[in-house]
Length: 354
Image 1 (cartoon, helix red, strand yellow):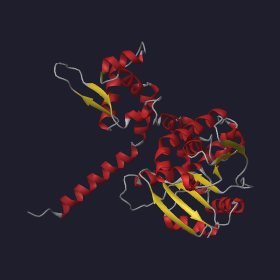
Image 2 (image 1 turned 30 degrees about the horizontal axis):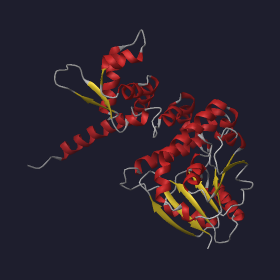
Image 3 (image 1 turned 120 degrees about the vertical axis):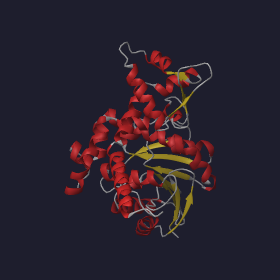
Image 4 (image 1 turned 135 degrees about the vertical axis):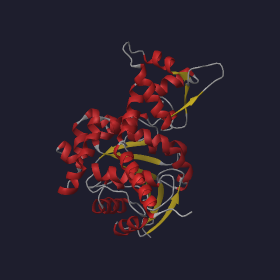
């Protein structure tokens, strides 16, 4: 029996309504994550070394006026969202809650924790610009500027606590990704010096130099960033402005840097890299997102989310498709390149002058 046009239209209407409310309520996912982090739920279960009942979790939270019903509803929501698992053991009436591959990332002292990223991104002060996105599009300035009255980097420079949270989040992300990056690219084939342009507090360059000690590592970033960087053997921290001059080197690394900037600014950075290459046949290694709006990779939706973050926070920043990367590389003096796909949200672009 065929389905009537009216039935099809009704089904489409219902799906449209469901999709609308799913999008409208999406912010609750972040709120629930923040709540779980503030209550240390993942850490509590991790320290218990096994699944826990709701009452056990509540006892460890230790709040004298804890809303046990509210905690139950929070855990039900997070289980449905696949942040935690629930299990049932014979002879136990109470549901047991366990960590899974998602909630393990919330354990604060875990090697691959993403908790600092979550706390920085979900912080009310840092989330505020996302409520000004419409003004940013209407007026041609970033939502961050509409919120803070200054550009995002100026905001970080003048707000030590926000700057600390951002640097910790970036360092956390690097620690999460760095093993995949280092194992996917032959940094051992490089010679001489390697400058990590916009290297933050030096986590990436330290990891590379630790594995390949023949390299002379330079961590280059803004003075207020490198001032808080720890000392690493084989790594020199240099403060400066990549739009003015970049330290001379045999190779350059730009990890998650160019997506923060407009095409014009990226070309300026690339040209400064080219000027500072010691050899005419030198190379740059770019580690960044490659956008594929119609792709079916598991990370493609996340890359689109990242593009909206760039639109909100950074003046001209954006995620780029491969043709867009090709354009700025050519204009920046690196007409030859190859893309190396790696099992993470990022890709590696190796670019050459000749």
